[in-house]
Length: 527
Image (cartoon, rainbow, N blue to C red; front, side):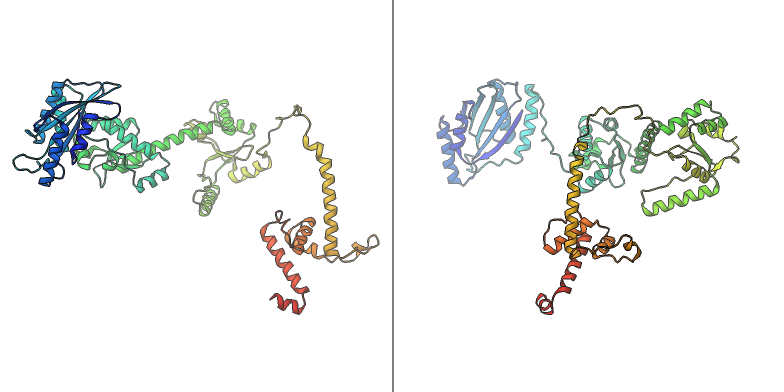
């Protein structure tokens, strides 16, 4: 049962609403009691007139009572509910009117009750303190008395936004903040005790911990911390303590312990994923196949590796020191960079593509390799540096895949580019001829003097301005000619093919050339 009340200052409007109802509803005026007349309009007008004389601003109190869909009451039950509400509010003996409204489609009924608040003796309004709380209390009592479904007195708590620190934490960890908060709220609403709440959180991968500054906090699967308070759960810290009171807070894990456990679990998953990816690598598959073929015999294993194109070396003290220095240098340039660090005495196999692999339990997927390699005489083996040098001589290209396309025929049909290549080549030659002529016109000033065969090679050649500029900026002759024409003609047409830095240098050179050719009068006017 849901009961809602409000004070009203207009008897005429209230009476009209009670007898007419809303669209889609049928109203039945069931009772008019305690007034000088049985007409609800005349009765409420008399109360309005009395309110004007006594200066009472809100002379009526109106209550709407409804049940859940499917639950109906008889007229006697409705009258019983009206009497109980009247007594709870302290309005016994006051004039009242009762109307029943029925939905025309569903037939569901609800009740409206209106009382006069003006006391006939004192001519003052009867106070109604805490009427909302009293209506909730009487509704819960009537649900028990009439066998109705229990309705919560609390309104649904709206979800409050997370604070900025939580959003930054989620962005840093790459987690779904709203999903995690929703999972914690769902576990809180589904549980009725501390142990049930802990179990519900664990099913969602969340750990309940004792906080440093808060009583309780939750740690998600990525190590993010969430405070259990009013912003997240809708309940105050005191309410959270009351529900979780059966838990011994000292036995709950600390935040540091929970985060360490999360970190270890995450690293274990990452190691498993890395091992799965490693097992798919061709070099690793070849090494493990050699180990199985050698039946875990170390000397035979080294022979199998050599037959498969691997070069094996052992790490000397100098090799180990060099690897540490390389790793230090790599991290000095970028903290996320690294170089493999080897320990003295390790065995390393360098594959045909130049990739190095430690011959340990991780690579061979066998934890007993240390015992098998302990008996190997490393004296005849190459050092790691020597093994690198040998491997570089026989290294295959990374993208080399011999025999992949051997014996295959091209079934894709004729190449469309090959059909137009002669036309394109002829067009390019014509364009080069035009550009060459333009270059001679701009820089040569006329036809170049003829020379006897071999004379150009015998005398020292002095570079032209075009050649000097081309050598300085690394441009081709057509580019120089086109750009020069652009600067002389002041057109922005051919700038797309040259970097901006070179364009700026060319503009400066063109401006300097123009200033040199200007007369003193032109130069003064330019300034």
